Image (cartoon, rainbow, N blue to C red; front, side, top):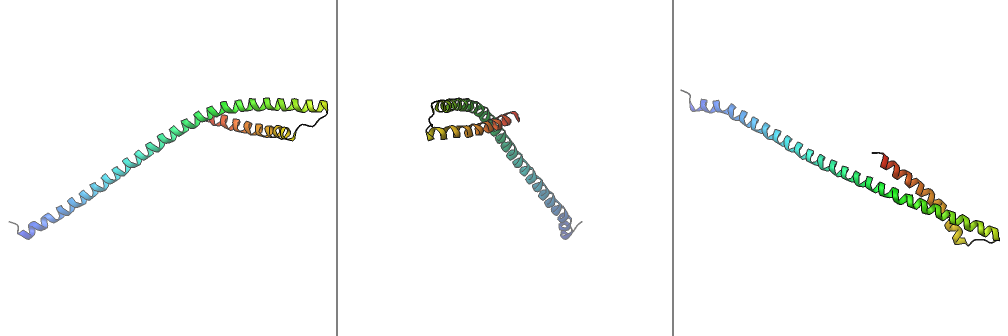
Length: 127
C-alpha cells in the first residue's frame, strides 16, 4: 500500500499536466476568439468599402450627366460670346469689360469641365 506522501507525489504530475493542458486550451480558445474578431472586422470593412465604391460609381455616373450638360451650356455660352465679339467688331465698338472677362473665364472653366468629365468617365470605366 502507498503512503500518503506517495499518493501526493503520484497526483502531482497529473495535476500539473492538467493545468498545462487547460492553459493550452485557454490559449487556443483565445486565438480562435481573436481570429473570429478579426474576420468580423475584415468582413465589415470589406462590405463598407464595397458600399462606398458603389456609391462613388453612382456619383460618377451622375456627375457625367451634370458635366455633359455643363459642357453643352458652356459651349453655347461661348457661341453667344463669339457672336457678341463679332457684332462689336462689325460696328466698331468695344464690348464691356465684364462681358469680356466672363467670356474668357468661360473658356477656362470649360477646359476644367473637360478635365473633370474625363476623370469621371475614367472612374466609371475603371470597374
